[in-house]
Image (cartoon, rainbow, N blue to C red; front, side, top):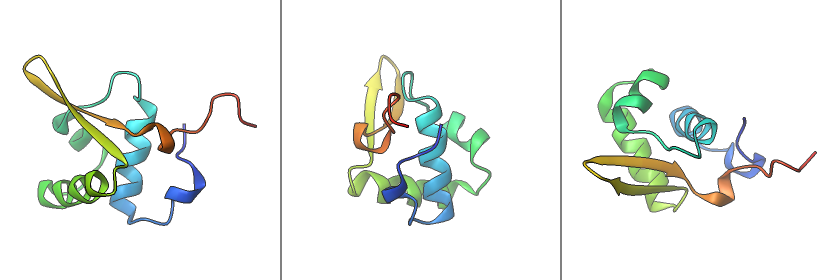
Length: 82
């Protein structure tokens, strides 16, 4: 699944992170899972995550002993949209 068009004007890394998260929006992803999907250095991934969080495009939640990252609802395209 892709991200909404209005969020595609971000850096390539941020777009890759958002796409990966939208694909797993139900379960979310850990940083380690994101690293396996977004092929960048950890520092670059952390900067992208910080920027996306500052812009409220991602949610960071504790799930037991894991930290899970999910896309904000406004980033996920409607499943009924054509």
